[in-house]
Image (cartoon, rainbow, N blue to C red; front, side, top):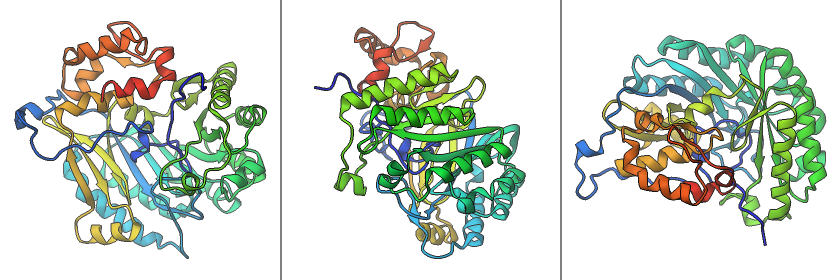
Length: 427
């Protein structure tokens, strides 16, 4: 029998950013928000009553990869031939322009270019994209601008161009430093290319994140520790360590590889946390570790229930104004996205988040933060007084899942281990 439940985080080709549905805990994604009025609830009662909109980030999705990995359930598509970067860039700009009325005048605190494999784009495309964004949106002077990259000589050579274009944070999808594990995951790079990409990334960027995974097919505790120790030794300032999960509609789900059992995976999780702490990294989010002052500001905006606009194929948005909060999604398939934007219809869904769902939506994000959030933030980001869910808060504290204290909403040590259960109590 497994001795505990491990928090399950969806995994994809490079999972540092979570602007698409990968942000949820497995099995805990919020149900679709209804578009009509619920029984006994008026439009006024559904409104958020926000004093001011929260901070705003921008997510840009690049949907292509060289090869689709068998564990990946992200919106990524194998590039069939040469990608028409000029066409996609023009479509991204049109998409952004159509979204401007919803965010007009609000400063952007961060940009995340995720995928897919954004490092497939040229340096010229990246420069033109960021220039177009700056022309249309007010960026804060210290805005964090992240680009996801996968190892490989052809991509790594572009790092200098990405930095010159304005990218100031790089996130590299390493996953493992063991060639046999990379092969089992369907990755196209080997350990030598991984180390070369990291060295080159650190040459051009002060802030570099590595994505690593554990509980890989037939992985031992010693092998998992070697990956973590190797990642630490590179000198990067941020490291994301994800438990491999078998996501529906993936080859791994249909034909599961031999994976470590729950107890061994739990030992790996303990090892990751211990090694990272010993190396001076702060474990600030379920799967994220950072040196002091190096936390990912873009992802922190998600976890604190900030707003984000997503442009690109399959990109998701969560936006708000003084009256309501809503979610939007773009068309998933690149060709459909291109055609719909050209027709002036970039959105595939638009759903208001009703009042009853807001506590669960907020907690599904905030409870991933080990330090929690100030209780006042619940009112500021949902428009609902915390007193409305007082009984739920008391219930989670009685079960030992939420730490005591009136000023913080924070998972206890047990709550971190049983995160699915804790979040489920608020949904």
